Length: 54
Image (cartoon, rainbow, N blue to C red; front, top):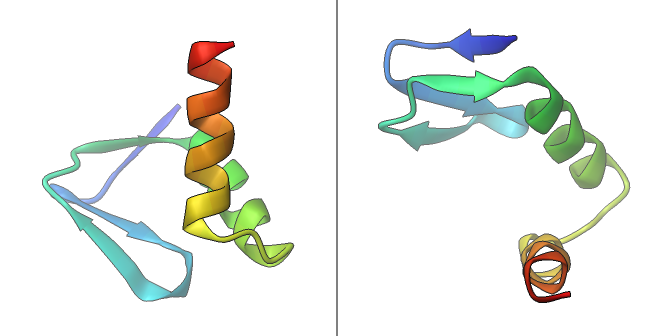
């Protein structure tokens, strides 16, 4: 299931990602949970990049 916001995706805390038509609900929930436990954007990116190379 994807969430559509007229080419804008609203991420918790009022951050807006321009040019996004659909946001996967599971990704949105993961992002919100990561923010709630205090992970930084850099930590999330490092984890995702580790998964790509591993």
